Image (cartoon, rainbow, N blue to C red; front, side, top):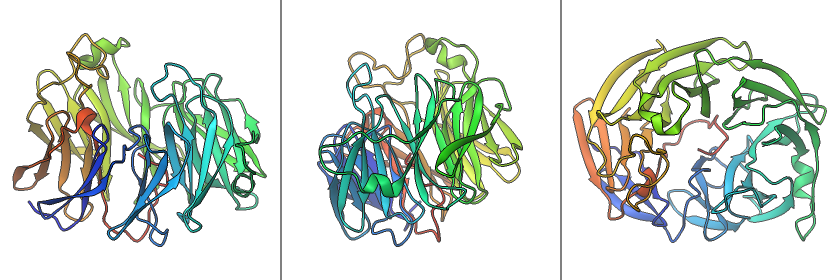
Length: 401
């Protein structure tokens, strides 16, 4: 099932990004190790690039399009990345890397027009990031999400761009009314609302006159909590998968999963039940979503009709050769091998769903006429990362995935 839309497939363990088009394959980026947690960031048209990711070995923001790839220095290990509405400025925060505890407090701000970057120090941890307009002035503001203790911090983008050398400390207005287990951030650039996933619910904030302001917590519509959020650009709603069920990570086959979409302003929500197991990440396209669910009894891809809030199709897919095991943490490796999982994406033009088989170097393409396969020369350990790069009129989700 060929597609003229380029599909990027990053093998972040092997340090290579492939471009797949019409069943042909080429190396789009060599010797670059995509930061797995930060993922790909799609850039708005006219942003001097169509996509970006953090090279977590070389210490660079890799920015590319169909014609060229360039690299701009940043601090690593990269944790999250986000851009402003114009796509000119990208902020990259640092995380744990191979360390078991937080140690880096460096934030990088990249100017894609000037091909330059600056760095400042904030707070150690695993900070999330979004660039949101100030409600009072409209000025773009960096909003950092901190953990343990939970807080949100607002720093004007212009102030960050003006920092001097030697990575100075930069502090902004701080609000500490946030649960300490925040994980998952979403921004609606139209309203300026930032949503943060915590055990308390979807906690919402805006920046008003330079300071973060809480605008209320939306309880998750079903039992459990979400960890990973995306903005559905066609509706402006926050989407996620709420995980419930047994608390023990080794009991992951019994985890419940529910796809939810939530209006960030009103709190109105819809929920679509999914099969149990490990639903790691999900994909969005206009009116649609797709989720891969890993389970010892068989893996499936679930296609969702977001307009009607229902499951439209469940497609069994071949098992991975070395899947996670029940009774063990699903993100721990098995028999000395990397932990294997799946990445998923939807072609916004044809609706074809691509899903990887971690460790096997395989991408399954699911369309109306069945399943085909693309074999890669590297294993796609940990599932890799996928990005379909169609030129939309706009890019609404300004946070890396």
